Image 1 (cartoon, rainbow, N blue to C red):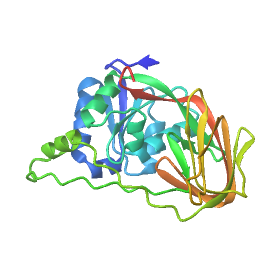
Image 2: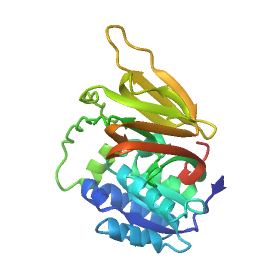
Image 3: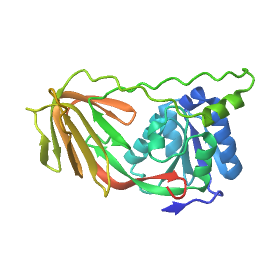
Length: 279
């Protein structure tokens, strides 16, 4: 692990979606980062400018202010440039940030920005598929959409945006509504390290894959239940292959497919994320 001095030079890339979602949180994060380090700010207008800015970071440590999609985009770019091994990424989550928070990034602009300045690099496993796509957290088949309950409106005057942002930061996270049911069972062959967990003759309700421990993926297959609930099939290994008829999957915040075959391989400690010291 590596700790960072506040004198580090930072490249702060502010995703356009973050500026639209919560401009006040973005401003707070910029102020904290600029007060604690030499920070160069970049405001890309789209994915191409985002990629260009990240590619031209030089010796500056990249910091992404944005949602989960921006985080995945940054890791994907660094992976495809084969620069993940030597780059510690930092993120200040703004917007839909369930993935970032599950990885240990603090909620709130101030806490997340302080972690960027004073935190520790933690090496995390990565799932890489055979099309060079990456998965930071988990993937699911079929891609079950999830609705988030809307936050309650905050009754403050329009001229006190800083107060709105503070209340939004301190307020408890609203509960998530149940996942929207999947359209129906699928017939998939799931192999882990070459061993078949379930074959095409057994319909399944869902398959989930996530990075586990010791550089392995954790796999859960839920067979179609008739009457009593079926016991999930569990497996772990370094390589997971799924075969089926035109299936889609959700990897982190992105839905991909349809594909008929996809293989994911665990890359142990492949990328670095700055987290509060001790996490």
